[in-house]
Amino acid sequence: MLKKILIANRGEIAVRVIRAARELGVKTVAVYSELDRNALHVRLADEAYALGGQTAAESYLNTEAILNAIKESGADGVHPGYGFFSENAEFAQAITDLGVAFIGPPPAAIVEMGDKVSSRKAALRGGAPIVPGTTEFVTTAKEIQDFGNKHGWPLAIKAAFGGGGRGMKVVKSADEVQEAMDSAQREAKAFFGRDEIYIERYLTWPRHIEVQLVGDQHGDVVWVSTRDCSAQRRHQKLIEEAPAFDLPAGVEDAMGAAAVKAAKAVGYFNAGTVEFIFQDGDFFFLEMNTRLQVEHPVTEVITGIDLVEWQIRVASGEKLPMTQEEVLAARRGHAIEIRINAENPAGGKFLPSPGLITKLVTPDGFGVRFDGGYESGDTVSQYYDNLVGKLIVWGKDRPTAIARTIRALNEMVVEGVHTTIPADIAILEHPDFAAMKHSTKWVEEVLDLSNVGTSAPIPAGEAAEELIERKTTVEVNGKRFNVKMWVPEGQAVSAGPAKAKKPARAASAGGAVGGTGSGDVVVPMQGTIVKVLVEVGQEVEVGQSVVVLEAMKMENQIQAEKSGKVKEVKVKEGDTVGSGDVVVVIE
Image (tube, rainbow, N blue to C red; front, side):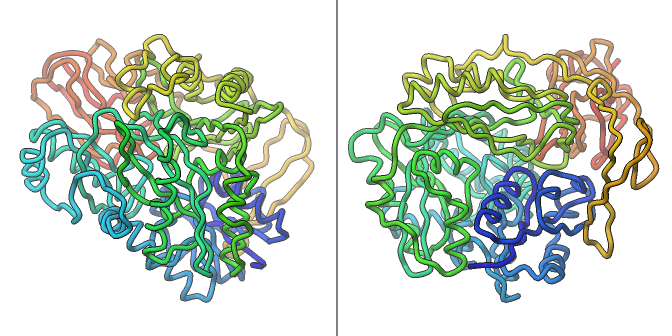
């Protein structure tokens, strides 16, 4: 068994791994950026090392800094979580070259399956049908345009080394290709460190179904369960269920068998997920995620299997604890997972909502679990993913699980930031969801969220508590230490001088369209300007995009609410802006 694990990640997944390791008696090491100095995963770990920097590229994607932390801590295992380096073969190889166990698949399997193009070839070798598209990277807009003109529109431009909807853009005509391609590559580079892309036909009304599997280093691979992940917005999952409900007889077993064959074809071990698209009775291989999935807990609660524990045991060289027959026999009931994201779903826009969580109260009760990465007083940064936590609910059957999930969501309290909870409730209460009539496009094309809104976040000042016992942190040679002290009531303790922050100007009710009616185009959330689309003197129309704003690794088109001539452009590419900042003035 491994003795000490470094978690090369942050947030909810880092917390999840720390807890599983502690139950096995394994020591844990956290790494952190400047913004995450006092994050929950840092507070829970046995040791913590500073990476420096604020953005992901400066910190959690800094290979040298992470390798140094591994050496300094003496960790004999590294868990990559999901996102960041979790599907990066070069990182996995660098870990292996140190003589440290990578808690994931072998680098060669990541290369073949982590690259969505080569994974399609591997699926074909395993006998699984694939969605029509390219089996090579595309590098020019003309290649995409030619494919669409020949095979039909719409098409999906996808990040070859990504997942979770990041770096994916849907194009309906040749005219949209260049802009969508550029955006997909920017997102892929920001989130995964690579910008290669490929294309697929975009099916009209599919369900997204995936198969969780685990393999050991002795050649055994089992599939654990299916999951339905069809409730999505912007190609990112909102709600996941296990097992996939209302499939024709034999389809789940066929998917499981296809997933195992594909995994064995590349010598896969550790946890992984094979994703399929299901439509009109047929299923197609979509991609393989060579890592633990965000939605793994719904599989855990219907099987009683701790998948992170299995990952650690497999990486330690142990055999799988259960056979295929034992795994399937262990399944019972139905489970639903809700991703609680810091986004404002008002009007179906799902605008990022970073900021300070002034109050967080999670639900409880029979069959209810919450996997979180934040507590009251923690900050959701614009620089990272906006997942606050995951609500996982079990029921004896699907109707029970749905009812229990609605009850739990109504009990949950999150103040200081907007969340997706109102949209989640709207989905769960809709008859289409109960009847399993929704698809991956249903939330955006059918679900009416025009009356869904969230109350304004409570300002941080209203939630402040007066404490006498004070805690802070210090760093010695990059290693973090907690320090506790007693100070007079009301006196703050800070590692450095406090900085005053100008109050954010309120954004208009238009949200992403960001105009005020006066001609001032304001941004509704903090973020980074990645592209300026207009120039001084240019005529613009209502609804025309003027800048592209990246917040929480997602690109948002900021649009004009007034027609006229651009009088002033106040930002340039790379600028950081805050909620309510004016970026363009129209006269």
